[in-house]
Image (cartoon, rainbow, N blue to C red; front, side, top):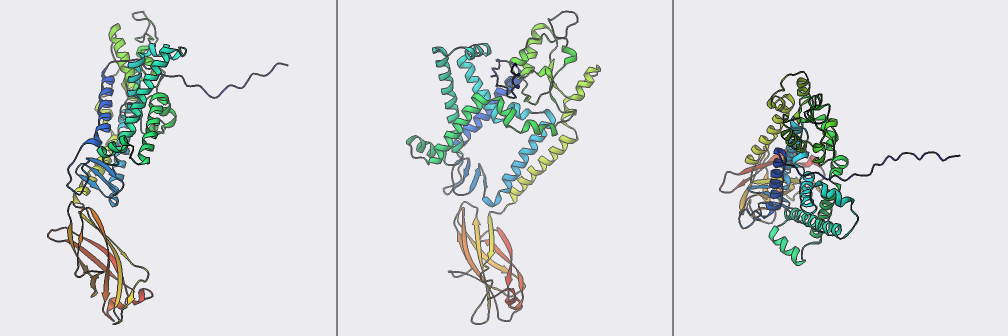
Length: 474
């Protein structure tokens, strides 16, 4: 009895993708975006910004030790995290906006995975040659040439990964100081660990995983379907013009000569002529490759190009496509734009209207009040006064209440406190109600504490309550 056929495997081994070099509008655009984004990432921590003697002079710094974020002239404190949340929401809406207008342009041009993969492929091409040379080397047995080229390539990749990890940690402490500590071996172990992790992940993601990250690890290809519609501009193949494929200038053949140029330049290794695919990152390199071929054979350009589903139907019927602006400005994109701009304007307004001082008052709950020897009722409060300015300031405290309450500060005379520059002062204060006064007898009374900076118009308040005899045990 013969053995039954083995069950087919559900696992398909990865076929390495070796994109061919291409020139054109979209390739040039990708080079510029790669240069700008990598330049910003690597250079930004080294830009200096003078904030005075009490603050760091690094233009962009996430100061975890002091729980502050600096971005040039802007300083964000922990209680102002809503600014960061607003920026994240704007980033999400911006992604929705660009995807609904032009497909996965973020993935194709500005995603870190795309940018670093482009850089790694550039290094690979410099060392091993273009597509055909890299294919031969891949299939070649391990000999001296292959070992030498792979060793050089992997070394450069590791150096890029090391620079990537190094640049990241420079955003969290003073860059020149940290660089000296790293070289001398005196940096904190967390710095070395972070650099190692980012070096290895950059090396693996950009050098080996590449399109696998976009297809399997990234959720956006699966989410983008909700962001696009029939008017979204995406990359497509005009099959009504290109089919049937065959030799150029042969009667009955379409414009496509089946040269595979669009496939050979694709960093995802797909054939755009098979229609829209989840793996397509809308980078436009297939357009450059096809246009180059069309120029050589004397055919019109844009056999492959940006087009929407509505344009495809119109072109099939011999009608001209809509203008680009008709696709960009439509209800969905206008809604995203309005929301995005509204949040941005709100953040800017909040940034300019915020007070340089902040106060938080917490009543002491154990006990809620104390009865003094003369029958007066006293409540204690913990006040945290934050001075978000570059110099020390004096603040006067006053109480505003319908009840006659006396205000005093623990451990000092008067009602003026000095808070150092860019620091928070914790102070205990007391409110006292006279014996048998309405505030002393009531369950609680509303109180407003005012804090005013001496010599300026800066003033903030905090509302709290005063507990009387019916407010708890004294």
